[in-house]
Amino acid sequence: MWKLSVVVLAGAATLLAQTYGIGRPATPEQIRDLGAAIAPDGTGLPEGSGTVAAGREVFAARCSKCHGEKAEGAVGPALVGGQGTLATAKPVKTVGSFWPYSTTVWDYVNRAMPFDQPGLLKPPEIYAVVAYILNLNGIIGSDQVMDAKSLPKVKMPNRDGFVADPRPDVGNNVGNNVGNNVGNNVGNNVGKKAKR
Ligand code: HEC
Image (cartoon, rainbow, N blue to C red; front, side, top):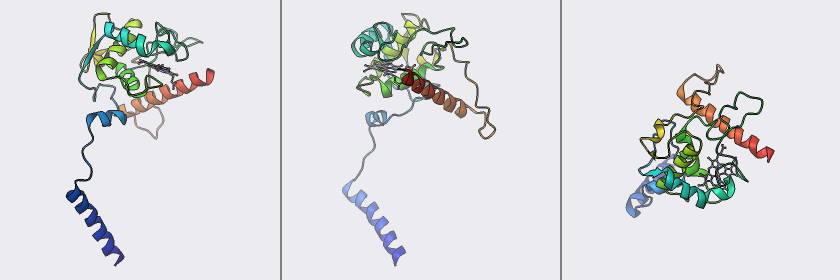
């Protein structure tokens, strides 16, 4: 009897959904707000494009109050500099010196920045502000335009600075690299936070 009522209930739920049209497909905006991840190779990047010049405006309006006029750091961490310091006693880890993928910068800004209003920026603004940060770091020229095709092609200075997780319980595949890098970034950020 118990089993029967479960079956009957489950059937009723399906019927209800069909009859009353409960639920609907999530919109692209909703999926984005929930934090759809952009893969290192750029899979998942949306349409739109942004120039360095446009990014300068976005940065001045939305980011500089926390990261400084030229992204040199204020209450938020520096987003420029540090190239060549990673192997020294005082490594300076920034987007320019440490982050292995430009696409991760896009993903992070999309989901987490501005710190006080995450989700505020539209894709073209994110392409633009990421272009500006890359340009400040000397990684792309000031006339380059970032979009779903060009951004994944940008080679970050520390692209080859990460190693696969050597533990035997985890295989040496791409997935692990991603996990490692995310772990490192999180660790890095937590570390920086603790210092402030
Ligand atoms: C209200 C202050 C605030 C604003 C505005 C803000 N940020 Fe941030 N940002 C932070 C803080 C604080 C962190 C560090 C967060 C952490 O470690 O968890 C951060 C971290 C970052 C990082 C990661 C840096 C790293 O190497 O770990 C990036 C990239 C970034 N912000 C970009 C931006 C961009 C682009 C904007 C403008 C669209 C912006 N932020 C606006 C406060 C801010």
